Image (cartoon, rainbow, N blue to C red; front, side, top):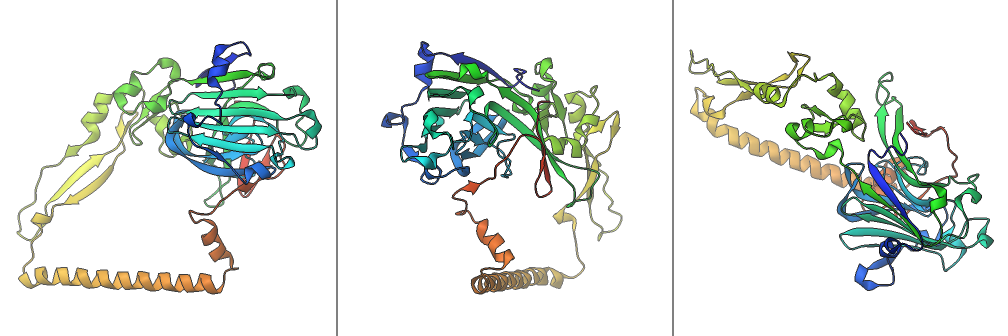
Length: 403
């Protein structure tokens, strides 16, 4: 869906509106917080860098802590970073082929004061069209879920920028990833499906203008069965008892929704039905012989279409286990201690062998795989030229277009 107003409402403000001036964040004013100039992005073309927020930011009902800032005038919010960053899962005040490396005056900077995260692309120019002028604009992510775009200098209208070398977009997008059920893992193809997009009218983006997105309620915010069932019917919320989640089935948890057959749960089942069938205890105790164990069987699961297809779990109470020999009780702790020492020694030896191997053979693929995924890795991510449409990349197909 595109611009359905299901997830966000938006308002646009012109040069004469007070709200335009309120939304613009002066990056030179220290009262807003500490501003950081990203050295790599400010001197690069078609690169992106990951940043961790100081707060949980709600995006389409999902709470995110990690984002990716790109030189192309947008923020990527996907979990899996790939070369098709411009396709889906973005917050784009003005996505275009900007090249901050052209001029020393061009910067990509951001601030995070715990309540709002602001990214500013300052005096950036289009690659190959540097004479057309410099663009300065911002994207602000508020802790409340509000998103605002502010435009200070827009020397060229969007319809004149051109998208031959880089997509030109302004708005929001989110998607989910699902694995094809027809192919066995790990050979199964993964498809990124864009389930919603908000596109800004290009005529609204001009000098001294602003756009403000206000987050609307979603099914995901309801964390109980009662709240889910009492939600606005227009949201189409359903409660999945197995996942303990409220959803309309179209969000980033789509794969789990399918895997656990949440669509099959009966609409006639009430929250009281879930609670009454959630736990049934069999109190029968077999005590004919002193050496037998007491077994308590718990049955859990969802009631689907009038049937209970839960799984049985067996719990054995430790006080009911008796042995005929007191020497066994004495030997059990010693055996556990010896086993623990052996496991610890094996782990230490393994770590030593791995460390020596990595140190001696740093060019081998396995050590490089380990090194590149350390917490300190990833100063920036370079991505390739891309065009709208379908593109296959390492067992991952990205599907674009409104749904």
